[in-house]
Image (cartoon, rainbow, N blue to C red):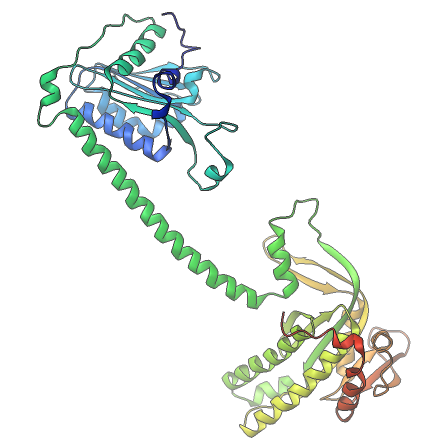
Length: 454
């Protein structure tokens, strides 16, 4: 038998002997078995050569303290590993360096051969393309997997030790097991069984703790998801969900498209905030903004942001935006009547609408970004709402044309801040809201735009 260390593999000893005995194990299970074998040697002070295959020196380093204690009781400890890190100087512990492409560099093994106890843990790391490993197995989070056996059969233990001794150029001497040791009340095999159960139970407790922590984190994430969902717009939410699935080349940071922008504002809110109890005003404002946002979503729009007492929303269709504005003003009128009856502050509302090419993109720092709409239509809608009568709305010419020139909207020229020339704007006053709504209701396009929610 002449096998060099560079070509030696212990795994074929297992596969040839009885392939049906092969089992797949995880790192945690193999650690439990390895520590149990070490405990047997230390507990019974077995003077022997302890063979341990670690694959990499970096994998051995966390076990340095255990192996220092082990080496103090053994004749010697041989550690087989690829030297990918400095090997510590430990009395009685010798590194057997492996080449990176050596078969033993892919095997996790321990061989213990003594007259009182014999055991061989012989496994091979499973890699991509191995028949017994599937992507589904890896996806369940077991990490690295190994295939092999733990055997106490004298024939296999002796064969494994002989292969290692021959590859190292050592004189192999078979070991005869002591029958008296095997029949002892606390034999090494009994100690091994108890140790293994202890380590496996310890692993189970750790897994239980991790499971409980994971369950708690899942509940926290679900609660946080619910909170975040209320803090961002529909478009930002959908993009956040798709962001992780998109590749860097397919992620779009800017969209350019025609949009209708809707701005609302409460008349003289600053003066109102000075005269009303802050807690009462905040509670009223939250209910008011809920009315506005719910109506926007009903008409398939999206809330870009809340601006104190105001709101900015956008729509892909001007007709949906106008119908939403009319519904908002009608619902705010009912809201204000209820507020007045309860001796609470009323919130007289103005609405501005403008349509034009807009940019939808990310804005902010590297650590925090928001999705917002930018463009001339945004600025124009904000300035048009200032022109509106409380309880009414003002729209620009593009919105007026896009809605089929509603007769209830009265047009006139006005000077708009930031515009060098007079602009034609169209106003629907509080007394004309119902007429405008009746005119738009009969149009087939608008009937298809309303949804029950988002």
